[in-house]
Amino acid sequence: MECTVDGLKKVRDNLDEEIVLRITKLDSKPGSVAGKICVTDGNEVMEAYASFRMANAISSWAIREKSLIKLIDYAFCEIDNKQVTHKERLIEYSPGKFVFSFDVVDIESSEIRVVSFGVVAKSLHSDIIQDKVYIFSGSGGIQPSKSQYTPFKSKWEILASKNMVYNIQPDDVGFPKIVLDRKTILEVSEMEPDTFVDVVGVVTLVGLTNVTCKDSGTLIKRRTLCLGDESGRSIDVCLWDSKAEEEGSKIYEKFERGEKQFLCVKGGKISEYNGRSISVIGASTVLLDVDLEIVASVRAWYSVTLDSTSFIHVTGSSGSNLAVRTTTISEMMGLNLKVMESSDTYRITANIRDIRIDNFSYPACTRVVNGRQCGKKVSSAGEDVWFCISCDSEIQEVDHKYALHVCIEDSSQYVWAIAFQEAARELVGLPAQDFASMRDENYDVFSAHLDAVRSKVYTLKVRCKLESYQDSEKMKFYIVGLDV
Ligand SMILES: [Zn+2]
Image (tube, rainbow, N blue to C red):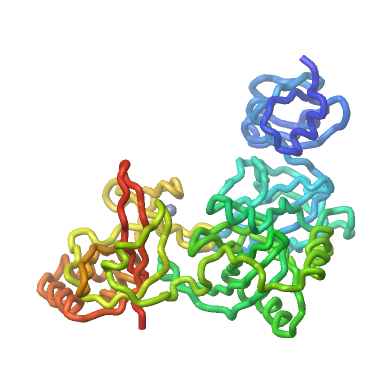
């Protein structure tokens, strides 16, 4: 067996292949959770933390210095200078419990996330400064990364322990400011939803901050801007939470002054809402007019084009749930949609013919993930215990959310439609939990309430979608709100 040529480069590049390295130094006690080792591929040497799994293997295989190790599922963390490229908020995910993470890059553009909990999270959050260079050393661990929250390719993340030492270093221009795997907006428009993307473009429009109500009922700030690039396309970019306020206000002010701005978004998430758009979430980084080659080239391209009106916009009408026009149910049913295609939002004047009252809500997960409620449907796992597949954990408390089936009727036709959380709440006038309690505790009051809901005529915002279900296609109707 021989050392793999460029084995250490392969480790850094996160390649998914078997490599063989020679151990030059071992610092791992049997039974300890993390091992520190030096390895070489015969060319360069890397000092590293090994993963929990590796540390166990080192103890149990009785691997000695100078022996060769074959690594398939390897995990290393170099003890090296790293620049912080992205600092997250300190998140209190349940009372008194904190998580904080930040992303670092080394001089060769390899990125990895450092995650910390509890007191370690609090002290790192107050000490770590974005864009500064640090040497991280001391004992830490490594755990598999969570791809749904990590906007770059890395199979692992560093788990900081309280013994981790970090020393700030002088600024070093050799470190990349940001590592981009840039896609054009045209490419983004053809990619799968929920994928992380990096885009660079010119800001062609900036909106004001709005407050949006999430399905979970929490209010959240949001600001939409429009970004165009040399693919001739433009797209809505939604900034959420603090990014809507902080980065968003700066962009807005400059835009109002008529300045042309070039924006880099790293780790934006593709959203399918209303065509394609990009969501800038906690894990995303936004840089304005940054000194990068790619930004310079987009700027150069724009200086000859100068016309932002010619972009083809890949997001549906901005302002998403605005109804495009008034129509009738039968006219909506006659729409010619492709499978999974969603129609525009239409305004329909209808009364409610019936409401399904046996099963109008579902238990939803209350766990806070990345500062927001998970909200996925949970299943019962015994008395007062629920299981959330999305969080892969048991939870004790649930929220009740609407999935209200309503039969709506106008002069042309009637049809069953679904109203989720906010829309259902607007119709019923009560949260799902209260409506369920009313039904279970006092049926007469519940029944009178239903009659009241049914007695009115509504102007509903409705959209429809052609869904495929067990080889057949079915047009589904969604009430997205009341038009007032
Ligand atoms: Zn969950």
